[in-house]
Amino acid sequence: MADLMMNLESFQPDYGVETTEERFLYLRKSAKGLTVNACAHAVFFCQLIDATKQKKQAHENVPLYSKEPQETSLRSLKIGLIGGGHIGKQLARVLLELGGFPGKNIQISTRRPEILLEFQVLGVNCFYNNRKLVGWADIVFLCCLPSQLPHICSEVHKELKPSSIIYSLVTAIPLPRLKQLFSSNAILRPHYTFTDSSPLTLWEMSRTVVEALKDPDVVKATCPLGPTGAIAVKPKWLEAVFYAALNSYTCQNLPYTKALKLLNEVCFPVDVTTSSEDQKPSPPTSPLFVCESFISEAFASSLKPDDAFPWFDLTTVQLKESPLNQLLATDASFQNNIALFYCNALALLAADYEENMIVTPKKIPLSAVLLQPTTNQELTAPGTDGTCPSNAEEASSSESEDLT
Image (cartoon, rainbow, N blue to C red; front, side):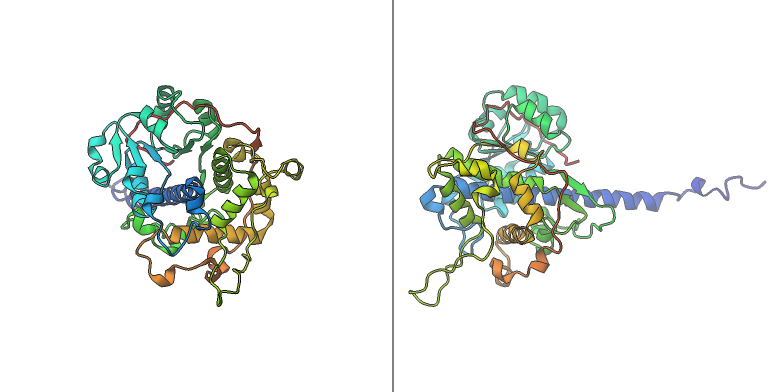
């Protein structure tokens, strides 16, 4: 008797096996690439905010990327992680190994601190007390499950400092909901997109996240203003990063003129190498931030030299149009220089980079970093209400987290 299923492909024992394996590998590479991007962007943000929080006399004229290693004793940024699962651990490793942050500057709140011995021996304080962590940290990274956020927020209702920043890696919760839960406008939430047509070959499964971020090609692939790759963060995140830096200066009661000067020194350092003592350092050739880069011309004209910038609503920055959005969308030269700043800052975090890989902005060909200017039609702008953010309800513990 003939086998009725002989010519039915879907009924054969091996049907779908190869397809399933390919899909599984694609998902693994996607998850790895997403983790690498998230950690790269988080450590870049911490480096920039740390540069703004250091004492003025200590960090003036010290660029974010420099051939001279920064003294760990100068690190003033306090970083808290809520959640000690996969994402929390990866982020902690990158901050410690590449970011150069000492263990005493990092705390992790998780329900199972006993499984974080590798960090405790490095001086990281690991415990289960979300209120304590939120009251201590300058930046609070949410590395928990979406289902845990409501409890976290209610638990730490009044502990969040007005100057603290919430950085959410819980991408399943939209920004407006986060703002409502935390009663705060100092929230960053990177939004990642995938391009099906782009290969995921960069995200080697055999490499750790730290190893991947020592690869110049990986660093370029994570650049927010670089060519669209398999995984890309929306440029609105980058805008919020710079507005957050200005908020940091505002909290120090610095005049807006001083804030712009310091921010430009961090992002666009002057080449102070001269051939004789009589020569003065040549001015930077890259575009600089000016007041109108962040606020309207009308509002800028009303500021007095001793006035500080208003407090910028970071959630509004990520949802609406802003002057910085317009600048980045229309000025290709400015895009190039911001891309160079990002790539140099991340490249020099790798302590074992070969000397010929450690370069100044002038030595990196723009074509290697940015092939095409990009625009984003759904970008948006900052609120300038001039008030510091209200106390936020806080983030709670969790040990596993996924970027989805």
